[in-house]
Image (tube, rainbow, N blue to C red):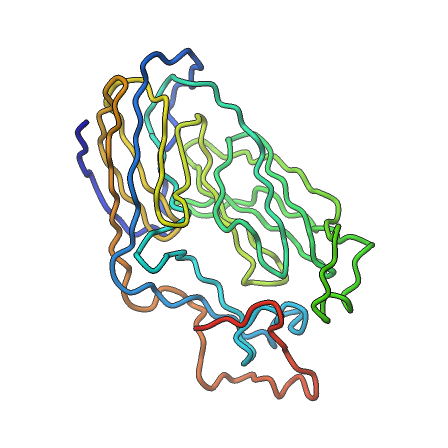
Length: 303
């Protein structure tokens, strides 16, 4: 039940070798082991990204989630009061055979001008689903990304439902059946690439990241940072903890019928991380909207 830490690096668009060159073999697992632990972020949680709503489409509707001063925030780090780091992907990167991969395509919802969930795991060459639950047009642009640069995976409009009315949502009315047509699209990554990002071509703060895998030995950490991967064939493997902003690699030994504990600690990155941050006196302010107001009736964000 040994664990060895290999490396820790800050990730922006770095190639990650999750998939092995050989095809994954599904087989019966007898007396498998478990890998579990807690992922934490130590230090001050970084500031969120900040977007001036008056410079982007649909500022009033999308401003239903905002600061109340004309800014929309996107926080890539989901951390609880005790440092538990949510939505970090823990994956065995070199496992060649094991339990059946019962893949269910993840569904990303465009709701209240955000992509939810922010981080997903997909099976390479399989589909991902995206649906619009807003009464405004979104355009999904998906890219695979690595140190070699980005490449477009798909770029399609995301149709809205004809049954919902913007006026109702602007009054904070709970509207059922908001979903438009579900767009299903395969994620086909080039060899050596498995990180992708999806953005809205109209609303820059709508962002979702994904990691492509070819086996079922992965998990996303929970709200308190806990995770568990079970039914692992006994042996020694490389494991990775991945987040769009950082990653760490480890070596773990899984013993028959036992649990290997791997607690993962990330140091919070320091300094300015993004091009977009809130400005005290922006060049373009709410005065550009005249008598129109931006009312954060869904969520008032705190910088």
